Image 1 (spheres, rainbow, N blue to C red):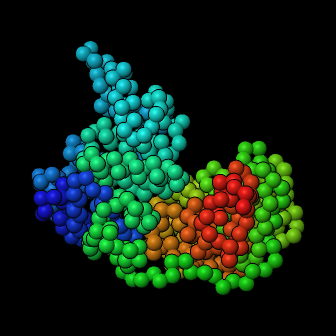
Image 2: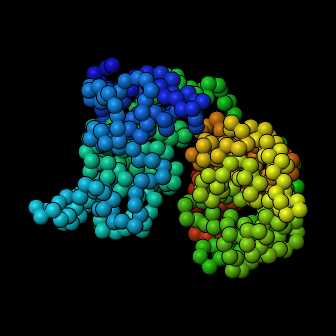
Image 3: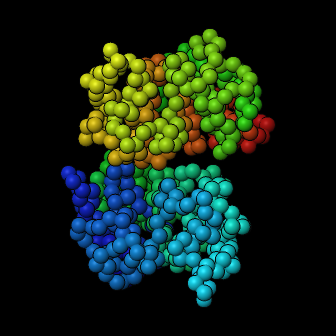
Amino acid sequence: MSESNYLYMHNISKSFPGVKALSNVDLEVRQGEVHALLGENGAGKSTLLKILSGAYTKDEGEIFVNGKKIEQMTTKLAEELGISVIYQEFNNLPHLSIAENIFLGRQPLKKNGLIDWKKCYDESRKLLKKVGLDLDPRIAVSKLKVAQQQMVEIAKALSQDAKIIVMDEPTAPLTQIEIENLFQVIRELKASNVSVIYVSHRLNEIKEICDRITFLRDGCFVGKADVKDMEISDMVRMMVGRDLTNMYPKSKAVIGEPVLKVENLSTEEKLRNVNLVLHKGEILGLAGLVGAGRTELARAIFGADKISTGTVQINGKTIEIKNIRHAIAHKIGLVPEDRKKQGLVLILNLIQNTTLASLKKYVQFGKLNLKKEKKDTEHYIQRLRTATPNAWAKVENLSGGNQQKVVLSKWLCADSEILIIDEPTRGIDVGAKVEIYELMNELVEKGMSILMISSEMPELMGVCDRIAIMHEGKITGELERSEFSEERIMAYATGQVI
């Protein structure tokens, strides 16, 4: 072990019933560095970090923190050692105040044993200032934006005198400005000799903010490198074990007549006179900044939000979509941004999730035809190459990419002809992303039409035939593939006239 390593995890192994999750994995993190931990979903990153945080017990291996060997890591010991993990799903209590969340279970006390609220609020203000927030610490966390909640989590870690902060997909829900603010906080943490372990599938971020990388694949350590010595293509090769020469495979579908036409569509909350046309066999991108109204448009078309004025046409016929059932009946499917909360029932198995939107066709004489459900689900497992032990497996145990495939299977099973996909690859590793793009291409080549919402401009420009751009609830521009550029998309997204 090098003396420069503040954290050293050596030959870490962990098995679960029937699964070898980690096999002789090493992780070395220096004091005051930003260290990326990269690997596809299922590579073992989460298991390794849960061992570091004390949530899991290692089967084999050694852990050293600041030169001291840790025989048995526990959550309490990890906290005492200054190890803090900020998960994608924040660990806060939204009904409590910022100060209560920061000092939960550790509130400063007066001599009489009562909580010293003045000290609690004063210390919270100091911590919030360190992470760039000028907020009243008495505000409930539920009233904060996602980016602010994330900063409160970092402030909480600093209150525990954190020496190592793990950030798991920290930028997934953030706007570009919020990402830049986060990176500034990370740089300040680094300058204070705090180490950051950074987990992300956005490889351009790794290039910008990280110093070194450790690569995992299939539960094994496959290498480490300095970021300055790695191109993004090199990172991809280390993660997936092969070259992905075409990150954005493009469909050869023949684009036909309009299948969906939205005219002067408005809602009470957000949308204002939106006009949009989607053609048969087309992937139409929908770009815009967070809050522009992209998700609201998807929900309105799908019947989840009420339309105030305007019309929706399917195959040239004006229809009224009052609710989700009407949308499904007109062959419209929606893959939502939050697949775990809105697209899946995690405690149910693949069969139950796949047939959820099309149960009517499995009812015979008042009973579900379970045999047909299973047969169809297995068909979509094979067609989409979903990695699962079997059709009876619970969806909550699948990786993000495979969960996304189950959501897609649900709408294929419902015979959808128009598919709206909101952030199709959020939280999905680079190898699974290419699989999702290839699947989208396959679908449009067979006549489906896709409306795709994404916050990643390279993804939109790589996959889509056209891109419509939204700003403050309306469409401000539309670009053909030959006109694509990040500058033009951003200009329309910020309301500039070109």
